[in-house]
Image: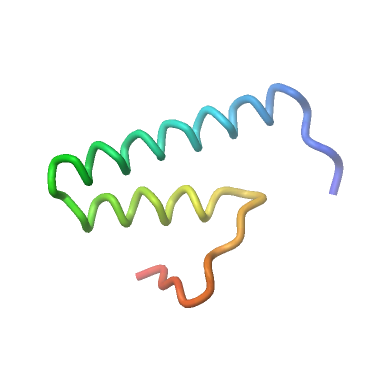
Length: 57
């Protein structure tokens, strides 16, 4: 697999940061299921691996 371009890396990092923010805000609001979905979305980003035992649905 070719190495990612700097713009691709920046975009990926921005998306991960956004998903982390969404997860934190969902937890703050008490929406635990939504927070788990945001965390799972971050884990499913290319270059990430799912944690052992994680379920997609």
